[in-house]
Length: 115
Length: 113
Image (cartoon, rainbow over all chains, first blue to last red):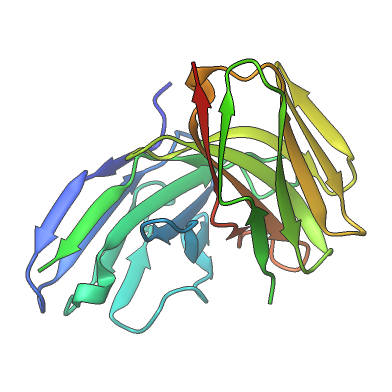
């Protein structure tokens, strides 16, 4: 079946605007992860969902960032009052469960540019 | 706080060479360790996952080892090819919170024809 998909692939916005980034995980995967990657660095953990609930949101940088997964499938990362420092590639990943053997499968990412 | 370091940051080798990429982590209480490949402008592709109870995993020309006690993992690539050129990232998931991965900054590999 299809892999993890993310939309849009690119998003350019102005400082202070609101943006939503969407992630469609692999069908049947219960765990979903959001990461942020800046140029030349590894992905940085933001939030992790198990089913519909956020099991760990300790990586969200501040209260301008929020993510939901209302039906346990598609997830949306929401950023309010965007700042230039939010510019990065936002990656989504999913895994079947959170078991020891579970591989994380990543989407292609959304490149966010805040002008 | 878990810290993951990958050395070297960049590596250039001629085609056909065998090579080793290194990953070290500060907290040995890990759930698993995963090696990924990232091509420019793309997402991450999983290469190998090593469970905390395992010492190595193999897939084709790739072999990953894990030494939890010393906080180290290596990715061995045999008979390198130009198509292996990419950034290689390792990520560890801690025992205490298996959902939260910490990544290194990667090693950018260039294999010259």
